[in-house]
Image 1 (tube, rainbow, N blue to C red):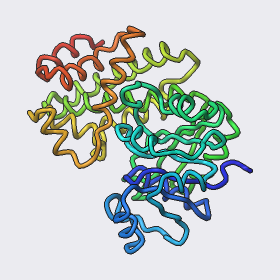
Image 2 (cartoon, helix red, strand yellow; image 1 turned 135 degrees about the horizontal axis):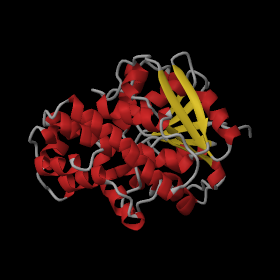
Image 3 (spheres, rainbow, N blue to C red; image 1 turned 180 degrees about the vertical axis):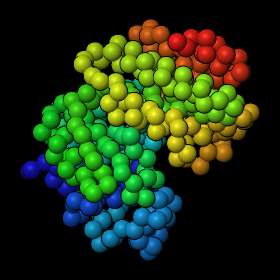
Image 4 (cartoon, rainbow, N blue to C red; image 1 turned 90 degrees about the vertical axis):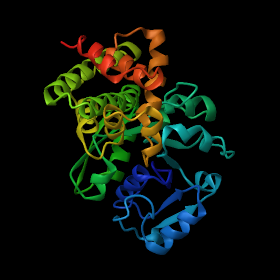
Length: 331
């Protein structure tokens, strides 16, 4: 089988929809798992996802839909994971077909809850998938801008450069440029951390602390990210590359950033519970904050911004007191 072979998308949200759009620019057919039959029926009737990126039209004759995750996985050679990280384990628990001979592409921007594992590590442990058969996708790229055909840059990470290049060709297009990297773990961790820092940026915005403070926060955040990545997976990397700094910037500043918007509500005085209830989509940084905070107990990296966000979200400390403390750590 020539990689990637038959491709399946698991997930029905905006990111899954954007990636499916990109895949269908270069692939004749994809398999697509969505958990709700009513959503699948509406998708077929309307020709677009009824709940997310509704302006993106699809040729439904080139999509094999199913609400049976085992049916979709069994038909695929390469499985693209694109569901929110808080629900990842629930979906994976339904899989009974063997996956060890499949290729996995993670587009999940989070840590596996409870176990605090990277998605690729979890897939190796639970399904026996070799590390060299796993890839990841990261930004800077908002699903909404893919829908609008705005220029986007995607990075494909894999220990095997040939596989990364092959999958990059599957999603590249007129408006989508791709680069490849062998820094699989670094990319996965950076995708989690940028959501945490976007919440911090949103809090600063909501508190009306000004653009100067926001700029200093973000510049300190990228150095904090670099310290953490060097500690958990020490290898040469350029932290100013788009997959690290670029993804942090777009997530920290964009109006499409659900993590920024979540933080902004908290900065404006919402309780964490109220902000979570009002969000229509998952702010993955909420979960990522606890996961990275737990992981860092082992590494003991100096991470004042992460610690501050954790104190606000999980210890219910005052954003004003916490952000004043965080600001004193800036340089």
